[in-house]
Image (cartoon, rainbow, N blue to C red):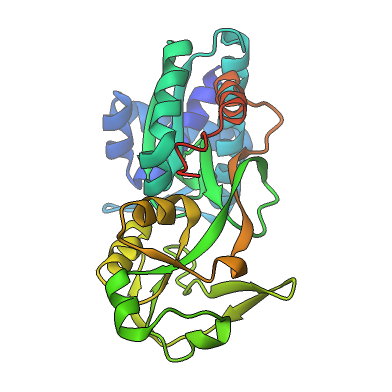
Length: 303
């Protein structure tokens, strides 16, 4: 256990960049932190930190060692959870990430229902359109939409599928006329979504002749929020493409009108993802199973 405590102290020093700050956050003295680091350095026969009067920096050996130390501590914590915990009575803290729109439409209700069933699980719920790095940001479970890209360290389970809906405000279509074919979109004003992580504009996609085609417009407006995208479309700025669950609500309220429904791109998948590890904490497994067993209803998605 002493070795694990020394690992924890060294990792905290590396994160804080200071012996004094690490000591303060851990409730220890600076002297005890310094001694723990020296003991560990003596055991492994390598210097982990370069110390100056102003700062502490990692050596090259320290960089390699501390990455492994984080994994050891994480597995030790998970093993502790596995022993203390059980699938029948999961406990501990769970950090969940999803987009703002998913949170507003159905995710909050599911999390609260889960907490009512599993009362020993504490939850931090983070709503953000940004795609989080689960490992780096300490997130246990996330709900993601569309292509997951190259994520070999993630396990993904599908929750449901939606469509990508092309739409515009009635006032916009009164000025321009309603497009009846994809070719009719030439010259129209377009509102684009820019991914917060990738920094790239999300292309307009249409189904044509059994294939998915992408069209490039000159963007009249670029936003990085799905809610802002929907609002900009509803005030008549230009044409937008939205996830169906967002578009249908605005269409039902008369704020937007669907365009080219026969060219919709379908099977826009929403998945729950979590990190692939040898030991999965019961609270994570219980929440993922709960979510898969209780996907959003058609009413919640305005189907």
